[in-house]
Length: 324
Image (tube, rainbow, N blue to C red; front, side, top):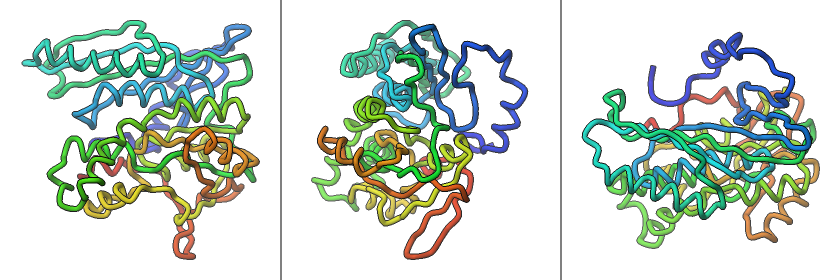
């Protein structure tokens, strides 16, 4: 198999029948498209999510903290703690692990979460540093937002800009590939995208506002996230290509490397569905968070319209990052 997430048919076959005992305390169970589990503890619901970082070099610690906190934020609650596993290849220096952990600590302090524990080891099983985190959050019973809550007629909202994470990884890890196509100002802007990867703020605002579903946009980009929301919700969608928010620097990088920005890893952007999308967009913009309505949830297929032509969206394949 090639690098990247498993295709959805394989993933379904692997998960099916392998979920252990179905516990009554679990409110949101594992499933394709659902990044978080939700467990009820009386007055409160506990939200859990876990993910590794495998496709980045620079800023690995910051990315590991943010992508996991973003999953919890997509449930409409604030993350409160994180557990960290670091697997380092043989020959790694202690200082390298210290630097990585320092970065994780700094990002955790910035987001107001505690490092609860974890595991660190050097192993011949990996040939580069791997960081995997599990984040926990807590919310009032019944207030947690699920990926599978989208309803027919909902507006589809995207926050900030697409392709922030992927562009940041390329510029910080592979600058030589894009140095000639970006101006000095655009290069600096793209490097700074790493500071825009948290969706905790919009998750909190949308959760308090009351939305039907949320999903942070990671591997597979916005088209992958749309497919996952529709799959989890039993719906379709119709979105407009021209309404997709993409920064010019990110678009230049994608065009130069022949990357589809709509299938490019996009942490920093949240996909939200709600009945009154423009009202939520106004609320987010008042908080300094860019947002745009890109389409609607439907009962039919997953469709994107570009230049007046309808295109059916297929299940996401591996992220464009792994095609470079």
